[in-house]
Length: 296
Image (cartoon, rainbow, N blue to C red):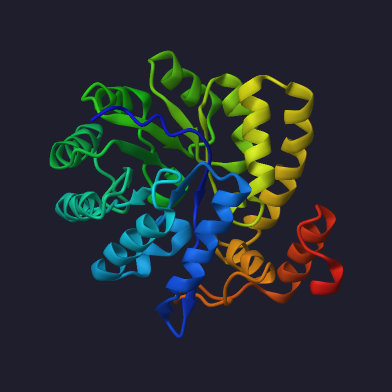
């Protein structure tokens, strides 16, 4: 399968709920809005989508519904990772049957595998699907940092499109890029510095409620317009501070709700945003023209 070269502003999309069920009409409206606003890929069933609370059947259905809603207009990269290799393989195969364009597959969390264990995990997933993989390294969530030596070994297997890097380490990004590994930033606030180093884009939380701004930042970085990229970076950094003022995806979903796209409903153990953080979030959205004060 030809390499997809996923790039630019890619949204790790929230999952709307209604009465503890996935709100598929709201999810479709979100997909349409993202495409209209310039989002370049949609990632369902990631951490931001609260996938840890899904049954496998729900995960399969969400991916299938997003693929249908997007209808080939942008790539769909299905969240399909697990800390169980057998489960990760099963989810990857289901995403392939749903005709996703790629798979986002996270380092096994809680298990804390050795570098060899990480390699064997991704090798097994790689061998189980024809879809290109986007590896996902997020030590703050998983308790394990996949170092460049291991990532490069997985990359050499082929059919790995990129790694979503949320280690926050410019040194790690630099080494990966020097080894020829494509990188997508896994941290909104690091989009400019990582793209300046050579990353190809971002898998974004902020894009959930500011898709046009995130697309503009990625475009400015890609064309080397440093003054415009700096201007947008300051906006995105401010939005990212609000988006991560509480555990992701609490503020992001609250923001999407404030924009009128979904109910503000979560699954335990995720709970609604605290009143003080909501007030600060609203002020930030108004400040950057994303929400009218009259609608707050």
